[in-house]
Length: 221
Image (cartoon, rainbow, N blue to C red; front, side, top):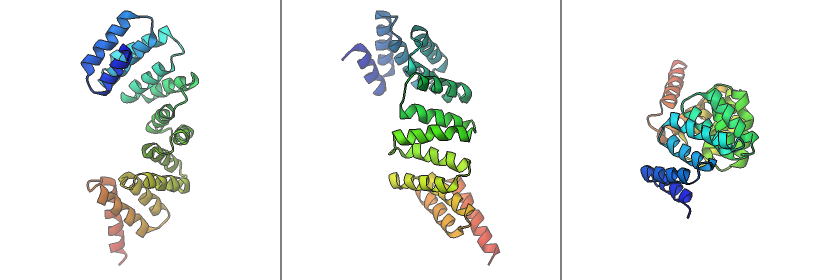
């Protein structure tokens, strides 16, 4: 196991100070190797030391302008700081440099989604689901993007797929309840809100949806 591998393992184990020592030694031994700066950037990102993480990722890109994982790291830093414009820019750069991984498409799609650029989010989230079809979180976000662009029939199918992967997904039930309301299926909406609350009793949106339906039903009696 190389020093770099040991550092990564220590970081994964939560031994951050020991990991920092390994990464520092790796940089001192070979200061022209961009991957060492990327690893240290990943550690700093994990520690939420965003300013220093940007500097280390930036150093990696100075040493190697084709270092796709450095741009991906920068994207994550800006995403965590809710600078979604810069996050998108760096995720797109990582893709352009050949980092064809589900996580990159997913994070780029999320950056668009959180920045309310729903139509732009769709192709990236769709590609993420193609690369990682068994990830309930990826599918759920794709479903949200479909719902936000008023593609409710497709969104319903995706949320149902989420439940096939993760039966106890309260947010999928909530969104299926909302879609049922749009289709004037009050009973089905109530059933989904009830299910969301059974899974997560403090689900405020589902609780509010259920209250509104019960109020409406009471007024029509």
